[in-house]
Amino acid sequence: MEASAKSFEAYELLRSAILTGAFAPGEPLRLTALSARYGISATPLREALSRLAANRFVTATANKGWRVAVVSLEELKDLEGARLAIETSLLADSIHRGDLLWESRVVAAHYRLVNTQLPIGSNSIAVRQAWIDAHDAFHQSLLDAAQSSWLKSFYVQTTDQLQRHHQALLFHPRAINTKGKPAHSPAVLHLLATALSLKAHTRLMEVTLARDVETALAMLAEHVEITLSVYREIAKTAPIIKSRMAKHKEENHVD
Image 1 (cartoon, rainbow, N blue to C red):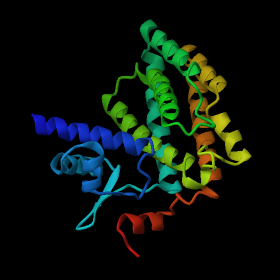
Image 2 (spheres, rainbow, N blue to C red):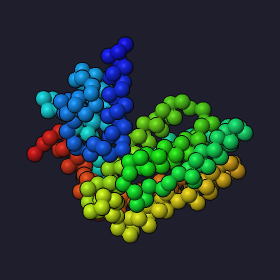
Image 3 (cartoon, rainbow, N blue to C red):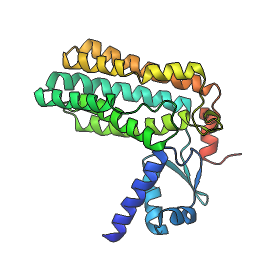
């Protein structure tokens, strides 16, 4: 039981560090260093890394250990497409099935979102995580009344991988200035402000609660497209972005 608990603890610690960008894409994850950092022995760490590899957060190569999975614009596009397909189906079903209690949860999640500090201009992991938690909770509340547990499970997996990509792209080394804060171009900041717009999220809530399925789904598609526009702009200068071929070579340590 204790070994299982340690393995679970290691998994959660490593998963959180990867999702928040504490470990960069492609960074080696060495057991000795991880053990010293977290005070957890090699066996539960090894089990946690194997589980993270199964969930595509890390990659493992025979005789070469583990690395944080790298990111690519191609994979981000794939993930956003998967997210849209899943979220569209869940949102439509949720609107049809939602009751008064569901509506109250949506309103509460929206209230939390609008009262959470925006992460633009901050390099604080705590600020970024607070926004991510509030933002994801809002989107999740919109889908809560949907019936399919499988689609909801796929949605969680997809949003986790999207978070990993978003953090890597927004906070890559060249995007941080000498004061340790993000220093994106005006074009990126404008697109980012549009993507995070509280007004747009409020409008999405309003049309959802009005049971306007067509408008809600159109707004969702627009939200995903704006998000992709942010990362296309970042990709013009971001060294962390890998082409599909470079990604394959790095994951397999091919020179």
